[in-house]
Image 1 (cartoon, one colour):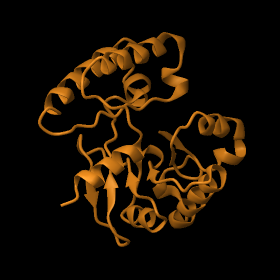
Image 2 (image 1 turned 90 degrees about the vertical axis):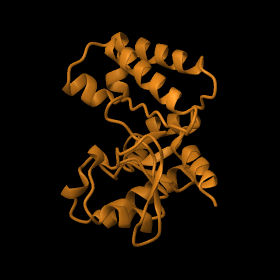
Image 3 (image 1 turned 60 degrees about the vertical axis):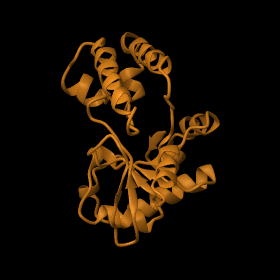
Length: 202
């Protein structure tokens, strides 16, 4: 799942086209990279981002991650009004949950700051190999807990951080480790959303 600023579709079409051709899910990430509480008109910027992605991909984004995970009290209502079905801003659990809004429910799909290369590598300055150690520890615990109740392990990477030569191998090794275990699915945000909605039906 690619968190993408709506403006990227026009400013860097080669990047957006490569993601589209690779079959990645486009998740709204603001129109430009600016915290939601710094925007003069959040609602307008949300609708602008949604339309930019829809126009480029032919499909409205179902998910949203605000730049810097920022929100105000109104953000979630604007997102639901714009047709967004899930958000990745609420780092609150390892399972999806429903949030009430003025325009109906929206689902919080698990996101992470623990396995996120910005806090880990840029802010906390961990050595490259910490990515693999922490990732394995995180996975082993969630896999064990998942025997009784499904768990989501989010992994958040930015190409200019984890894509560098001294880090990329640790990400590849983590995926190799994860895929050796039974019962594991590699899903996009919208696949998690669809699973949750089906499982939550009475």
